[in-house]
Image (tube, rainbow, N blue to C red):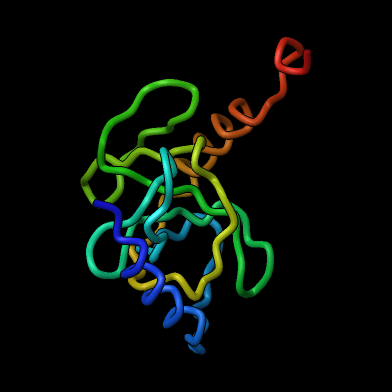
Length: 134
């Protein structure tokens, strides 16, 4: 069952948060991503947490983030890599802007080499092809 009311209470408290963490591309945080609708990715537990990779910093408070999953997924929408001796899959089809106020736990950084490989796959995912324009 969806927990929209519970998520709304967590979200109201997050909005009041004053401590702003520092972050940069390649960082991973467990973020309160919430209870979302349909096929949108959502978080788990009382804080609705999910790991999110910082892809591009937009300001000192916001960034473009890529949600991660421990499930191995294949295809052009996904990039699987190792982090802390575990497999993680970046879900390009769920990319969005995040406010750092949502961050709960710092989960480290991915290596520069892994980030370059992810970026190459991400750019291919974002590429517009002629048949999609019609």
